[in-house]
Amino acid sequence: MAYISGMNDRPFTYVIELLHSAGLRPTRQRMALARLLFDEGNRHVTAEELHREAKKARIPVSLATIYNTLHQFTAAGLLREVIVEPGRAYFDTNLASHHHFFFEDSGEIEDIPDNQVTISHLPDIPEGTELNRVDVVVRVATSTSNT
Image (spheres, rainbow, N blue to C red):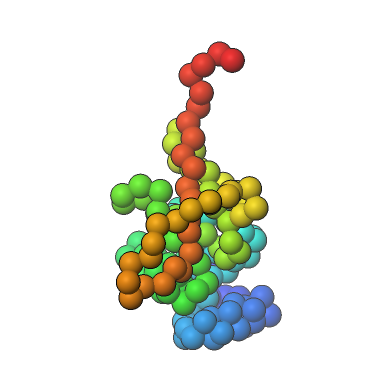
């Protein structure tokens, strides 16, 4: 089990602190998945992509555990879930306010800085609720025009 061999190395210190600060117990699987998610800076990942990365890194984890961990990280405020269509969600490590382009042809997702989107009016918020955030997903596809 390759991912366990480095468990006492310093690179896990920040992951342990990250999980503790989010109120999560730093299990071996959570620490290994957190390293995959957060070691490379801001990124967007699906559960299936993270599962492939975990298998490549020889981290023994099921797809169900990946989904559970991603949802736990999201509930704890470590990730944002970006739903681009029914049954298709990305998990975003960038917690700053921003929006997304979704490239329908490739399935890729890309950040749009918050200051590049202006929302001039929102509907009245239903009674007994409060606005959490506004997520904008701009769906784009390859142009079929020759201009």
